[in-house]
Image (cartoon, rainbow, N blue to C red; front, side, top):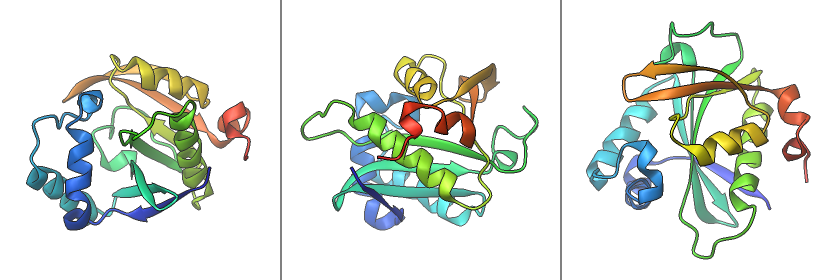
Amino acid sequence: MTFTFEPVDPALHAPLLHSWVTQGYARFWDMLDATVSDVADEHVKIAADPHHEAWLGYDGGVPAFLLECYEPRHSPLAGRYDVLPGDVGMHLLVGPPEVPRTGYTAAVFRSVMQFLFDRPGTARVVVEPDVRNAKILALNARMGFRQDRVLALPDKDALLSFCTREQFSQTTEGVRS
């Protein structure tokens, strides 16, 4: 599978992203009750922040996932761990499939990791999922993430985890297909 990435356009993409973040499976994004306007406003803030980016991922020209990447030293993680040069924070939401496909989320995740590691300066990907999100915790481990510790963040208890380029490349997921 080949995925492409384009920056989120808040006005254009808000209705689509709203349809994703208000799904029950996206509860960890804390936007279940959001309006389209709330989603657009959130992405306007992201677009204006030089330390945060949002990307819409496409599968064959069809919107398939949302990737947010951020600089941890300019996020709620600031001061909560020793940020290293090349650390890039990541959030990922896969859109609801029309037809579920085995291995699809892993393929998206693999593509996102490759996208991040292909960017100049990225040495390590940082994630901080809610400790109750068992599915993403398992997928993070499969992609090479190593758990560090639980952090009490303003909106959740998060499991801080890291994945270096080497850790990712040592997984079967890190092998380019």
